[in-house]
Length: 338
Length: 300
Image (cartoon, rainbow over all chains, first blue to last red; front, side):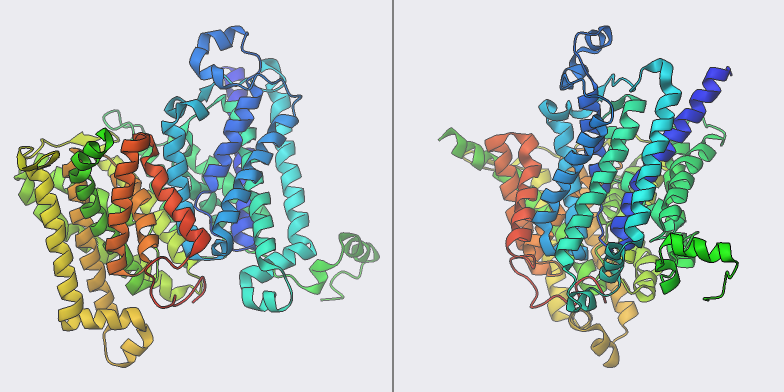
């Protein structure tokens, strides 16, 4: 195996890890912190991938465009400077989330709303496959160029890591902010939170829009690297990968969500590849990966519902600004306040 | 006027869809009524029925009707296992309605891919049964297979009704649906009755899966999950947890989706379910023929 292949393999793992990490962060804020159950999560990831891909396809006069023909015609013929593409994708995810949220209204909080997201996903999936004029149906879109060109793949890897880092910083800041406390209050005791004057519905739908936009961003980060997107990339069980990441990593813990995404989305998938392939049943090993993911999720929910990195209990000390805690460390009275 | 002829000609298809959907929706609603868990692995029960029948006829060389007949109680047993070992323990343990639902979602992925692991990803087809015309009235025509499906569904529905209303077991089941702890306090063995309800529900799901298989002639690992597209709106329309409502909701959804595919093209068939669902959520989240009140919303 040449050096280029090894590094490309590592790039692939890093980009998948970043994309899944961003999506897991979003789901952690949505489900882990606010307690909204959304089985259509991968739909928002996917709309980000489609839009992110379509704005990146660029001019239709390039040689690759002519060789791909039909599939390429779905490009929007835009040449947006780089960071705009993923942002447009995130915006599209947010708009779709706003529509879904406004329809479900107060059912966003309960199991009926969760079941409705299943139906919404299935209908959207069937339509995306059947309606060729929208996203080219089951063939999907292809030939999406990587930003900064093929020679600068490493640069894009750093950019993807940057997106993950940015999302992580924002998610952590949000979780620590008063707004994060509000989200946890809604998850724990919606009635009590409402009695204290927290606008439950407004908070829920705001979080729903922002986190699904994050999922769309994650999709856009991935799609320009894998260069194509079709309904085969976002079947119904795919949402389980993100739920599994959040549950295994630790519901409510942002770092846990990223760790879970790397474990479930990347490491497990790679570990399964090391199993001996069975020529007579080529689909056996990929199928086993799903079985392991499902069983692992159930096992964690039963034996360790708080996950690998449990959510830290908020107390007055952890709510102190970081600078105050750093000051305490410098003086050397660490532990005094405990 | 031509459209009217098409509507009448399509009546048989719509009636078959309504029969299958009625069975599946009643089964889904029954599970929710007795356990308060929305079972996302429900579609896999339909899929399993189709694969059991296929395995029985292909590998064990049974006649297809016998393989189907054996598949139904087998799916019922799978349904009991699902409730007894997964759904019930998680509902007892967790304080939120979400955890059991996520668990059934995981089970759904596991079962779907186990089917792929065992039988491969390709769809299979069964030799068609009797497609001769049984009833013929003007534009309206019904094949023997369609007639058999409808008769089977109606018989199953009548049996379900008799069990619910005429037997002591049905009375116990309705008591559990109304108030589980009160029923338990009155000496009803809620665990066993719930398992039995899941068995009945599994058998109904099995019949629905077989009927789906017979009506299309092919099956794959997504057979049941795809059908959830119609089951969920029908269950909401009938009021979740209401078994008679489920049957009415199923008839409405089946006819609406079949006739809309004549008017707008078959790819828009699925949109009817979505439109109905969105209308329900917008106007009346408790459904059209809802139970008096939901026992709990979100929390327990």
